[in-house]
Length: 137
Image (cartoon, rainbow, N blue to C red; front, side, top):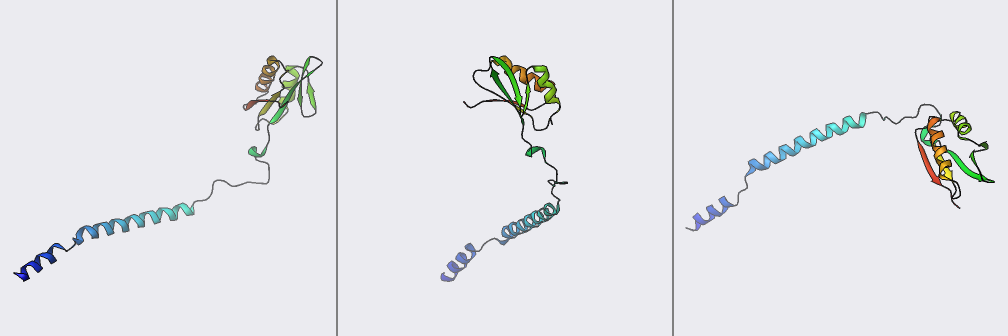
């Protein structure tokens, strides 16, 4: 009787190895597959490569059009150039690079029609990136 109890307890304590072998095999396959993909990804060339030493578009700053009131008359200023009308502003903007965009800055005393005229002039000049920036006063 004592022997019979011992056989049962050893029989109940045995682990099924079939499912453990399946798990180990699946883990082995998983690591082989992922290691293979990691190797291929490492061999890919980078798509971000600089060709030449030129300035990239992201390094250019937008053109800044400042709108000011001089003796009650609206004037547009781009760097050292001045324009008194929407047509002359459009002519100046056409000669500038279009990639960085244009930023229009106006003070609180400038009428909204001047800001609208500057936005329209920048669109007529071919700028696809336009923004309005209120001036700090």
